[in-house]
Image (cartoon, rainbow, N blue to C red; front, side):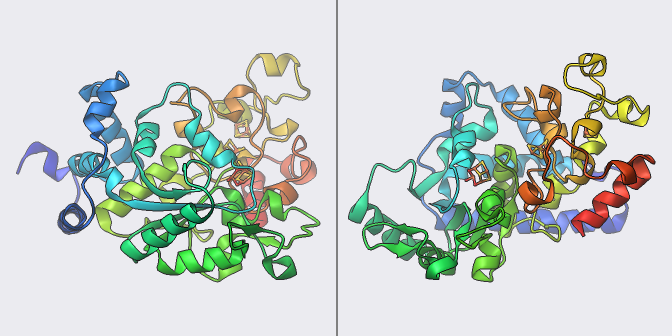
Length: 370
Ligand code: FSX
Ligand code: SF4
Ligand code: F3S
């Protein structure tokens, strides 16, 4: 057995991974057989953007570990990336600010996750496609027919249910958002909610919610995978699609539908200001001495202890920064209805209860999330 194969795992775990690898190979073979050829040569695209093979190999290692897979899966992650543009995607927009799409598209120094997103086979994307009106509608119908049960439906934005859905009508036939969502999701292989609005309602559903906007899962009564965040990190979407390509299903999720590999830990657990939290060194006022020294932002409203996501581990814009690093606390944008639930963004959730120390903070977080 090669050095790489054992990894110190016991026989049961090794057997589990061997079987998982087999499943992965079978699924990748079927994707390569059944879905159209990649329309972008991923390796040339990387070269064009000045990224080397070494950068790609480094990325496969980081992504394999992030997906909670052992290193033997690195070649499969690479194979999935090279075939990324085979998966047909229909990308719908409902009640939202389009910040999620913008966050994916507007990076100045795209990393491999973002280059992968450029290669995605967008059969229909209301912001990006050239077609409009009847032509756009026909494209959508053709994709639903040609790739029935095979395409991924990605949804940005909440679905307004008030006035029989008429707060949001779209397209030449004036269909409501809820009608379109029902039609498209019923034919999709899987539904991915991109951003906290489609996942949980979020900003469009903030009080008093006059349009009765709801997250997609709740509005349609379906199961969705929720890539939470306002906006979410592109890496969390890419990793979820890679998982789908490799295993033919979406990754294990928490009780809020968020992939555990990305949302399984609190921001607070990996925050670079954490040692200051533990030493009770808190910023008390913007611009004070503590702020200059990079102390913990809990007292000025950071919701990191109550927020599950990987921002503190993978950051944004190719690892350049993230909210807490930029000097503002986390506002809990990956949590349901953070706008209402975490109101008073620059105040701690409950000063009195939390003053006792970390255990109390974690307890308060668990109760709030519960
Ligand atoms: Fe919501 Fe996304 Fe925030 Fe905006 O599509 S998650 S308001 S970044 O755009 O939906
Ligand atoms: Fe970091 Fe916020 Fe936790 Fe402080 S409270 S350690 S700033 S996540
Ligand atoms: Fe959102 Fe907090 Fe991350 S505000 S982007 S979950 S640090």
